[in-house]
Image 1: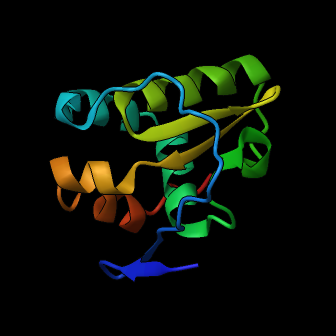
Image 2 (image 1 turned 30 degrees about the vertical axis):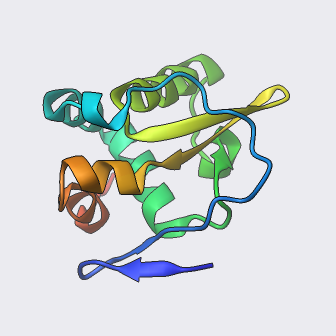
Image 3 (image 1 turned 180 degrees about the vertical axis):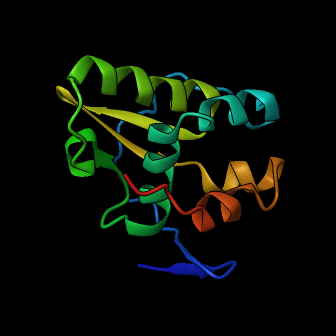
Length: 126
């Protein structure tokens, strides 16, 4: 496992294992739009999902159950789809389960420093 130190917070970048299923449909790097990415990140739940993936990943990708979110499955499906369609996460289908990870290299190429801001964000206390 390797991690790259980028700002005050350490973003985990784990190597891609061999033999992964093909990713679900997502925008190409050149098609990533800042307004779309920021729109997806404007929801605190989605921002928290991305932040958790950046800072706490234990494996290359994670199922929605790993996040421990107390939300209906349909709501979580919507949020994970929004992140994938905005180009923030990459999802792969493993049987009946979808697993996600952040497209760190792609987002850094298009929007340098954006993920550092997400990692440094402090969620509002409830």
